[in-house]
Every structure is written in C-alpha cells, then in structure tokens.
Length: 263
Image 1: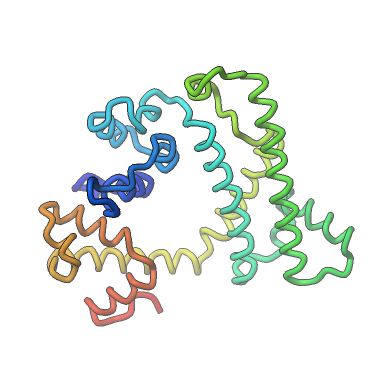
Image 2: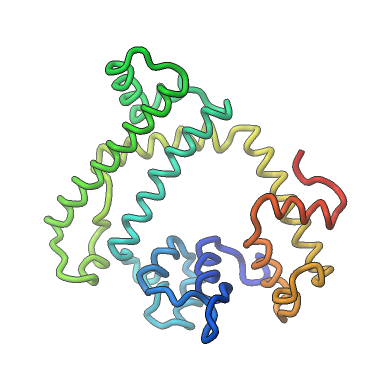
C-alpha cells in the first residue's frame, strides 16, 4: 500500500470502528466516543495525522500534531497493553522453547520475582515457577503504576482534560520500574522477536499477505461484494486482508494459489 495511501495498523483499527463496521441502519461504524476512538489511535504518522485533521478538525489526530498526551483512560490502556504483552510473550516464549528461564535470569524484573517465588515455595518446579514468577511480576508492575500515577496526579494537579493533555504522561511507571521494563523489552526483542524461527515464520507470513494482495487485485470477484464493488481496489483489498484471522488467510491463500503458505 506504500503507493496507495500506506497502511498503519492503529489507523486501520480506527477505520474499522469508524467506517468498516456496519451494525446500524443510520450510519457506518460504531458511533464510539471521542475518548475511545482516541485511545484506539495509539500511534499515527504526522502525514496521516494531517489527513485525519482535514477530515475531522480538532479530532482524534490533533494530539499528534500538537505533541500532547491522550486522556488518562488511553494512557492507562497503553501501559496496560505493554505490561500484558510482555507477560504473554515471556509465557509463550518459554512454553515454545524459544527462550528459557535460565536466559531470563539476566532480566532483573523477572529474576527478582523468580527468586522470591522459590524462597516462599521451594518445592515449585517447571511451569509453576514460570506462572508464579509472571504473576508476581505483573502485580509489582500494577502497584508501581498505581503509586507512580497517584504521585504524578498530585504533582500536576490537572483541573480538566486539557490539563492532562498538556502535561507529561501521568499514568506511568516509576523511574526504576520503567528502566526494568525497558530492559525486559530489549531482552525479548533480542532473544524472542529476532529468534530465527520467529523471523522465518514472519517472512513466510509476509509472503502469504503479498500473494493474497496480488490475487485479490487481479480477481476482485474472489472477495465479498461489499469489497469487490468498491472503486478504490487497493484499499478494498487492504481492508479485506486486514480483517482476516490467520487461519482464514491461510485457507484463502491455499485456495487461490493451490499451495500452503507456511509449513
């Protein structure tokens, strides 16, 4: 889509709730509140923010032009999202064998709570150690956010939503927890996200998407009429593929190409 308006997954999520969902007789989209839509648009390039601003003056993209913060709810969701992703990726990485608990010993945030769990429950073994470590790590991060946010609210003392927007991030980790969280992210990036098996699967998935895109461009009738009949063929194909589950995309790829995309 580089030559046809580009593609950003947060912007696509906003398109889904604003236009692509057809649940009501009077309008497209879900008629969500400003705050919810703003939270969905977690990131946005300046170019796309400018385009959104033209269509919706002083709307959800304005903060990317003014370099201000989203509301407190969006700040909280963004941080909770990061916390949850890190925990799930540790769990998935260890259970899949791509990373080990021994490797994670170099990560202070993980190792501290592993030792703490074993000190309280010396009999713990295998996955129970992993699960209890992650549980304690999550709790520590949650309570750190609560304490740090309470302190920030007292320091900033915003009178209204604009006060929140014009202040530095209020819902945040303490400096210590922020550093530990960044160390964990660096570990996951280095050892999990760039693991050869992961990059191989990612490359194969990209090929599946590319070939699906080309197939639908050439044979629009293979898509449902609501996509096939649209004038902007490239955006219609992008919308259709972006809404697929992995399994459906794989089935469609095999149907259209006659071969499996990922072994």
